[in-house]
Length: 161
Image: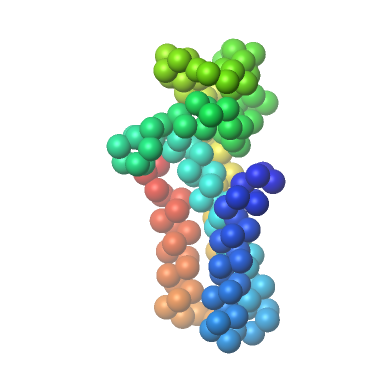
């Protein structure tokens, strides 16, 4: 969570706060959009990590399995390693740690991730972050901008899932 917070969520939060500052928003509204941006960024990255396991490479613009191929530990893999009782967790851990992987090993790792139940848990996490993003907007007056921010959360959560 710390990695996705720093790599994705904090930059989105900063952008949202800067937009609020430039718009001359009240301090409480700037804080609200900052919380929105942080949770939107978390939801976005979790969905991105899910798509790396189940997504279509042609639609994603990158090959599926990039995180596994590079040995990146994502929330999906953490869920699989912690709760994947229906899979060979030790095998998945070895595949994640292995530096150079054959494509067959990447396919096997992706299958383990899909079969572990981790995708469903990560989806629930993304939905929770999306709800927190929307909730953060409560102090903001209703407007087209607020409605569009809510729509952006819905789009992020439904991206190719």
